[in-house]
Length: 76
Image (tube, rainbow, N blue to C red; front, side, top):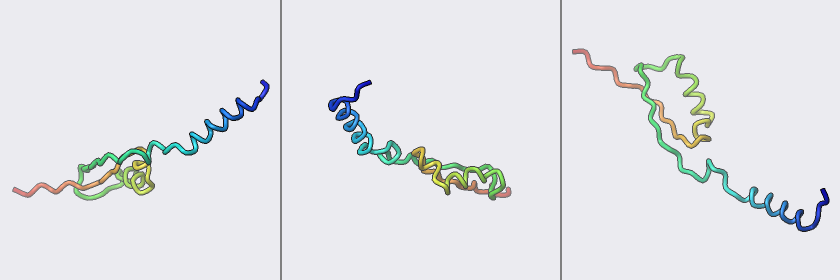
């Protein structure tokens, strides 16, 4: 393949367009999601959700995750 000035210009313009384009995660607002756990106190099964939230894995996918505990039912 012979690289001409025109094809080099097109390739350079395409690279510049990709460099300037905003990333999809920064262009969107985060979807708010409340995750209510089944137990009133944290346990070991929560580790993936808590660490994923702290490390920003959910935010990278466009999710603002809030992890909450449920209120214990009143004794009747």
